[in-house]
Length: 168
Image 1 (cartoon, rainbow, N blue to C red):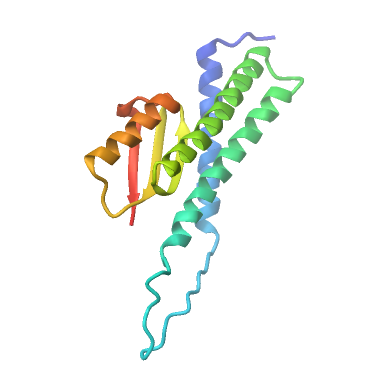
Image 2 (tube, rainbow, N blue to C red):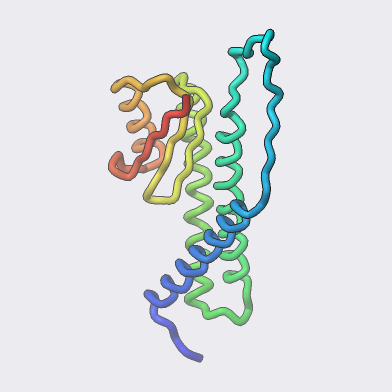
C-alpha cells in the first residue's frame, strides 16, 4: 500500500471538491429555469410591498446549500470507504467536522444579527472566510462595526476575511 503524503491527500480532496463544484455549477447553468411574474396591467400600479428580486436572493442561498450538501456527501463517502487510505479518511472526517462547526456558527451569527435589527440576514462560512448578505438601503459605519464585531466574536472570523453584501 502506498503511503500518500499529507499534501497529496489535501490536493486530491481539494481537486475533488473543485470538480464537484464545477459539476454543480455546470448543472445549475444548463438547466432551463423559467420564472413568471404577473405584471400589472397598464391601468394598475405595482405593489410596493412586493419584492420582485426576492426569488434571486432565495435561489442563491439554495444553490450554496446544494453545493455544500454535495461536498459533504463526497467527504462522507471518502470517510466511510473501507478501501480508502486512513490518511484520506482522517482528512475527510476533519473537513466534515469543520463544515459542521461552520454551519453552527452561521446559524448563531444569523440569529444574533437578526436580533440586532438587521433584515433578511444570510451568513455563509467557509472557514476562515465568511460572507454576510443582508437587506439594507445603506449601512452606516456603526452598523458595519456591529456586523464585524458579531462575526469576530461569535463566528471567530477576522474582519479581513469578511465580505458584507447589501441587498436592496
